[in-house]
Image 1 (cartoon, one colour):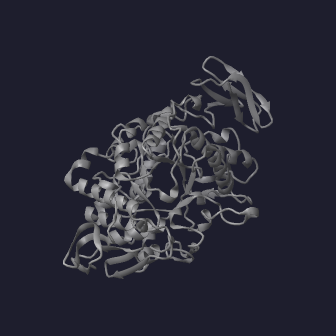
Image 2: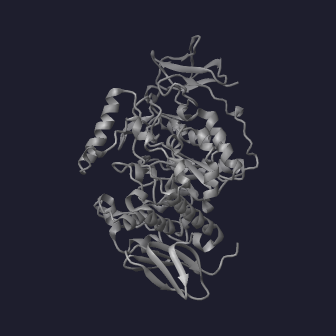
Image 3: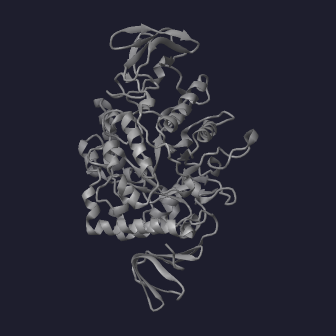
Length: 577
């Protein structure tokens, strides 16, 4: 049975605090140990030089939240039934991003299991969970987590996550987890009590950077990499989405992401199934996903990265918004460019940044499936002042047109929960900080930020329980006619992606796009996609050998394809089912 062990290199005294006793620990180099057995379910914490008690930096469970004691979790007690699971490759994936706390009324991993059938019927293959690491309070997005190894108690804790992953695998779905290594939340963050987890050599938008290259950083890098490997190994996860990797400042010759990718690939070989790392990066650098090579040749070797330029282009195309960074994407040629390459900015001038930005993607080296594209994400919806979805900005028909575009481009598509039926609920920013001063600072900061943009009192209070409640999906909508029609369209588009390889072809640089005003026409192999974003009905000649495979407000007859405003169509040779 394992014993207690903690890294505290500068400490003079470390004590293990158990419910029944306090035990002086023994120094072993930079670590402290004791012969007390770390039995499953046992609660404990540490005192460092008389301060504390503090939770274990590698705690697997915080049943009383980030300020309470840690609890030992033995992952060998998880009741797995997925021995036959072969994994899911990013190359063929369709991702579905969801937030456990607002996906169902109960807001737990177990209640989410009850909705797996919906995801299977929809046609997605990889469920992406927003962060589940322990954060303050019950409600929150999870990006202010402070116990990176512990599964949030309000979601059900470690056993519930294991049950969820096992249930997904039983129905053919992979599971991806969003993890945050670039910063920790301010509340309940005790890492600095133990060692140099942060450094003032670098600064990030959240303050001092995680220590990846200063003295003591060897252990901090292991803290991050071991965490990622834990999710793969102990929770059978298939993928990790790495938040804002551009904020992982690392001046070493071997970047922490390259080291992480190398060890992830090694573990994948051991377990015999794909293990995938997907980066969120603001750098527009294909080196994030190009292959590693000997002696530092090549890129970082991650499997994929988010393609925000695709989102921004589609958003501007559908909404007409041009504020902030959207201004660059009003270029009439933006869609034609992102249909061929994921980076609109690939060494070009960015007016938002006031500098050149990005680097070109070489199609021969990097296929399109390595780039995750979306119409909506937690960031793009939740960071609007009131959390409006596209269906609230432009209506369901134009959202359906956007879905046609997204699901026929050469990228790995990702949907945001409720998008597929045009959910009526907004999805706003919400928190549950327990310290009154921090809670007020967050609420006031949100009000002040958006007041400068003219929103005034319309911004929901992040700390109000009603903000999270009103962001929770209403599943009774799924069967309502106006929602059910959009849901069926998403299902049909995903069915076509599976049935027609040309529509999911990841080859970059080959999509032939024609734009006539607000009408987009492009070829995908021997098939044609038309999206009518104009205010008038259009008539398009249809060759007698072609068939209308899917249409939203589109009809074919007498050699003519008629498409209503905000309608779309896919036509080509008949498809054999």
